[in-house]
Length: 120
Image (cartoon, rainbow, N blue to C red; front, side, top):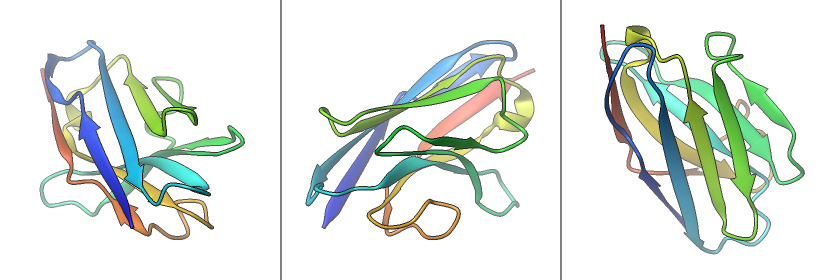
C-alpha cells in the first residue's frame, strides 16, 4: 500500500503563488506517475498535472504556463508550484499516484486533499 500526504495549501490573493508538496510512503518502489487532481465545489475532479518517474510532464490547458510540477525521486515527493493564481483555481487539491499508468488513465492511490483558496 502507498500513503500520500499533502501539505502547502492555504489562502492567497489572486496573482499570488503557493507550493504544494506530496510525500509518498509505504510500498513506494516502482511508482510510475505522481501528480495532482483538483475538485472545486459542484464540479468534477480534474487532472491538473502529472509527472513520470523519468520526468515527463503533462498539464491541463487551464494551468499550462502558470503551474510547474516537479518530482524528487530520492525523497519520494512531488511538488506543484502554482504561480499567477486565479480565483478559478480555488479547489481541494489531491495528490495521486499509480505504479503503471499515467494519471489520466488510472489512479491507484490518493492523498487526503489540501484546500487552496484564491481570493479576488
